[in-house]
Image (cartoon, rainbow, N blue to C red):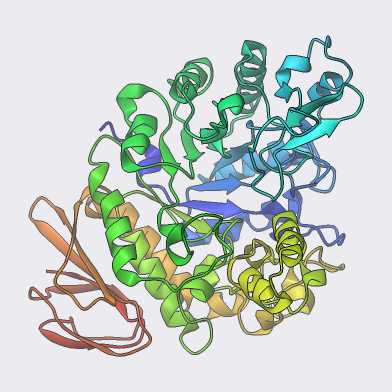
Length: 541
């Protein structure tokens, strides 16, 4: 595999609404991000994945785009965006744009035209179908609850929306759609962006009449065409959001010889704490089985080999915060936050840090549905309440898995609203901001922040972290996640106690050097150990 900059890079995801507000309207903006670039440079990241900042009516917080070549007014102007790219480049931080091309907003000019008549030249930019016997065309469901078909009175047909009914799906079968998307991508490449994160890209080759949505027949053909028309041959990073990917499918996307993407996000590990079966989804909770987690993460580490590349993540704007989800966000918050960091950042692949993760931010439990902002959460609550679920169990599911958990504003300091805004924040700030904030982290050399900073430095300075072989240690207690990374004649052992109970284990080899740990230790762990709650360390053996 030819070496690329993004293989030893660390990417930081910014959810702009919640990062930093510069003008007091309660909504984060581009100038706010510019103000905080020095902080991100101090952390050591190489790229920012920027959640959508395009013009949007905000039905799904910017993932419903009405103009791909303009900026949402509440975030700023195109001049602000150009300055952000420029200021980032000065600090060797590239901007990775969020590319949302499975669907647009219903306010996009293409859809406004498409709705006018069946003969309109833009009609075929979207997926329109006749109903069947006065009902929807078929059983396709929206991710945000209900049917994926919406009836349009004016033309008497249904349009497809795999997400909100205000997010009509584009028809990628239409070559004009594809060429318009590539033209838009080249517009942003011309602005100097570092690449694209591609929202639900595995849904673009759908066959709606057969109810095929993910991994459709022309998916890889479209991506190869996109590569050739836009970023191919340029030093850009591309990552596809692919909920349905297996390792074999991931190789199709990310094998350099196929000329598609740099890497994909796969979500197999993310589904391990949900019930599976007919009618079950992420809201149906079950406890995490650590043995399953080891198996899934190790499968992805090993099976891509040199034919593909992993992206490594615990959190993003759609997922609850990992320290609250699988760690302990009270007594052992710092220890478990550092444990998750060490476990992930020592793996092979490109790590992604979601804003606030690097200071150990936690979920914010709500007591009532009126506190929820997210469309997916609200739709699910209303649908399940009507099916007979109790308010209590629905609130429990929302507090465990709701997307608002990750979207509460960044906690910068202990001033009002955590220093995020001088106005009224668009979404509640977690009240623990007086304790958990950036300022406190920067003052404390043993903070979560400095663990992340050190892990980034280790990746930059050690080829072993980037290129080393991975081997899971099978013969451990279930709650011990231990693996080796080996390059040439050097081996590192990574050990994590996935439990708040002290756990006994005898290390399989003699420790030569302590590289990083989440507890203060002066010794190099070797031989029989009692691992403390959530203890994690890396040693050279």
